Each structure stands twice: as C-alpha cells, then as structure tokens.
Length: 167
Image (cartoon, rainbow, N blue to C red; front, side):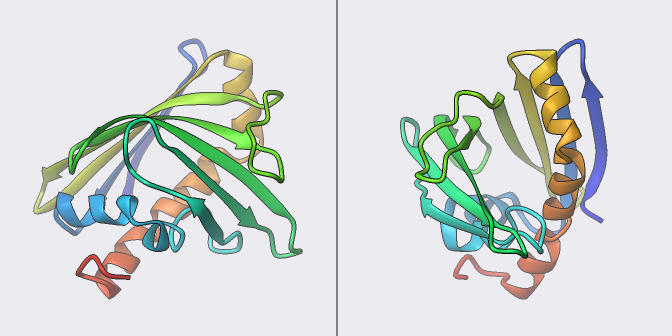
C-alpha cells in the first residue's frame, strides 16, 4: 500500500502522512493538478468526489464535495497559497456549506504536500497543521486518518491504469 507512515501530534496540532507511489513525480503531480483525475481518488471510494472549481495556482480556490452512499453531500474548499510545479503546493483546507462557501464553525488546516523522487517512484508527504489541538481532535474523531489512508491507497491503482496524464 502507498501509505508508509502516519504521525499525529496533538500538542503541535499536526498530522503527517507519508506515501510512496510507483510513478514519477511529474505523473503524481499531474493527478493533483487535474480535477477530473483528482476526483477519482479524493476521499474514500464510497464517498466519490466532485470538483467544482480547481486550478492548482496560488491565489485560487478549489471547491468540491463528496457524496455519501445515501446521497448526502459534504463540501470542502482549498485556498491555494503556493505552488512549485511538480515539487510542492500549499493550501488552507476547510469544510464548506452546501453552497460551497467556507464553514467558519469547522476546523481549517494549513497543508503542505511535497513530492520527491524516491525509490524508483515518488514519495509524497502530506503535512497538515490545525489552528488548535481541538480542531485536530475534531477531524481525527470524524475519521480523517482512515479516510485519507483509504483515499491515498487508491492512487497507485489509478496511476497504473492511467500511466499518462489524460484521465
């Protein structure tokens, strides 16, 4: 499985997930840059994602929702703060209302996703920092660790089935 490690530090409000993929960094990056590819692996398979807006560019806002098996929609957004093509991007990740506007009552995390060539493929480090320990505990209680692991573990299969960037 791609996920090789998970660490949580409540005191420092962080969760870090490390994964290893069997594709070069440019290919893994292309998956995150393309909303049609990203929605195939963002979230657990039983909660498929739909990206409404997505441009991997500093200053842009990504909006998306995941749909439960019962048809309930759970929305989120990214405010992209920095992009270094094929090596890293940074963003604020938050929950959104049904109309895709940010929900200020839910935790927001500062995220850095780093991509580097390693072991014949790509190592990605997903680093999230929450404003408060309570915010991190809230998302952990909601199942973020299990959901993220399930989602990330789908990526190698998708990349093997789609070795070039077109979805």
